[in-house]
Length: 306
Image (tube, rainbow, N blue to C red; front, side, top):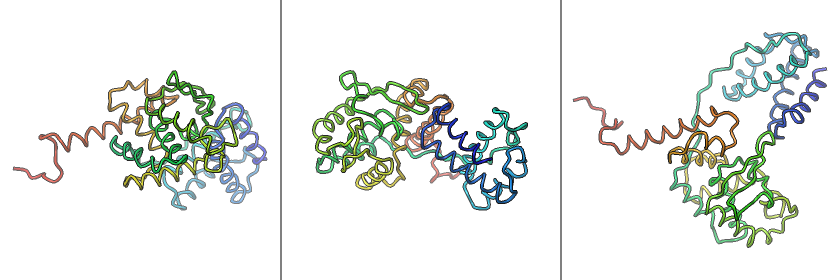
């Protein structure tokens, strides 16, 4: 019975909630593991038979497997959403997971590149100006210049570009549309790619802007690998991912004095609290700059009391 309800729930996420394939897959993986645990340990098949202690034991099992608190929190979020669905559909009489607290998590600020590192990354992407090099520069210029999610970046179609107006049409999370401005350097890089490089890569799908060397849609893994490779060429030691460019975009805007609401709109965040996270990154950078340059700042290497 639980497997059948999971299928209905996945359909609900897709049709009613409009979540992305990757998000739905993550929920599904978490819930398959959860349901298998309930059936193996307690022979539970009916959602009405699930009790709070069983959920707590499942979370304890995850902790014994040495999953990080962030991973456990994510899995608990999947469980909470599933139980909310069961309760809202009157498939259970009580939402037994409602008052289970989240595990305490240590917040790690995401990696951010400074502007010099961004320039080094772009310079390293030029290579010998092969079609793939031209594509790579356009990818990085667009990802950093407009702060796009990797899924948004790789799903852009040529028809989404409005280069004369300096805009790109984006289909974001939950199929929400937004218009994002393009910077001058992004426009130049995209034009060079579209005119000089993309035709040589012989795209097999006309509605896909960024393709790989085989002419197929560039994958998330493919973009991640090329970005890591270019970062090494640029002698950037930080751990870097496509999302690093988005973080850097938001942080640099806020450091430059951009309004928080404007950054929220550009990033496509539904909740401004998500955008406010970047103010912590920006404040940390300001603190580091202050400590390094101000004569009255606290210098860690000179803490002697006179």
